[in-house]
Length: 133
Image (cartoon, rainbow, N blue to C red; front, top):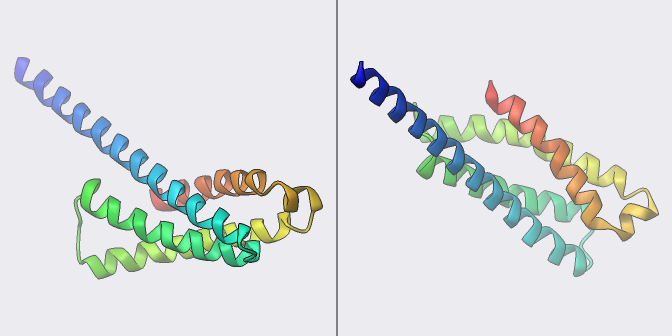
């Protein structure tokens, strides 16, 4: 009986550890996204273009972090990368569309942080549900 409890405890520990590493990777990628987006925007780069650049870099960083620190790869790196990028392309299109539409409004043009936070929140749910499957 003690062996089963130890096995369950080890499985739970691994699950919590994996989820924590996944969260750290997501936070790192989001931080990189913001650290690229805002300086580009401040330098006069259009919000849509800044979003495409920042999101694209953060997606690649997130993929690499997950590959090396979160998940055990099942299959080839190329196949895993291509599937991940396919889902991320949808996230890129969604995030770019949201940034584009929000910037039609003077409020969001002035308060880019709010536009970016809203975009991040909405795309989070897209990524969560798409990558889940």
